[in-house]
Image (cartoon, rainbow, N blue to C red; front, side, top):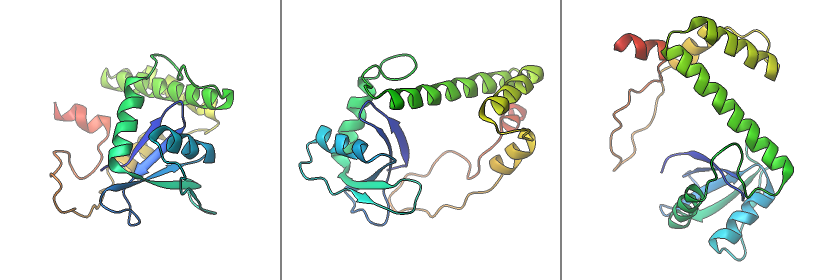
Length: 180
């Protein structure tokens, strides 16, 4: 099972199988305690064992059976409302956070589309607007892209997993265009 993020009306989750999981379990992580309480309620866990870590990118974690997690994710995907945010989110702070994620991904879509069309002026404009909006200051995007996209990744081969058709490194949009 691969790592993933999922945004639902119940909460924001990151899941992965790690060394603390059995073969039939997945570690579901969250930044907000009540998100895991909501997940446990949604999948029928009566007394959830939620762990809080003092350090880490996700403070809260809970083991869930893979089949329960799969059913939950499928159900969440089928009940998604089109448009920014999710219609069933009742917590205004959460709704605003989800809308910001949606807006950032919309920006990324516009940027990558402009890159594919080789619209360099629009790419620069979008990057400048994004930097101004999020206070990142001047960023050398091409240098950052080269560092991020061409760094080889080393992954241990797991037994029984199908080999990926993707290269073992991430590539920039410029490399993909040049391959055509």
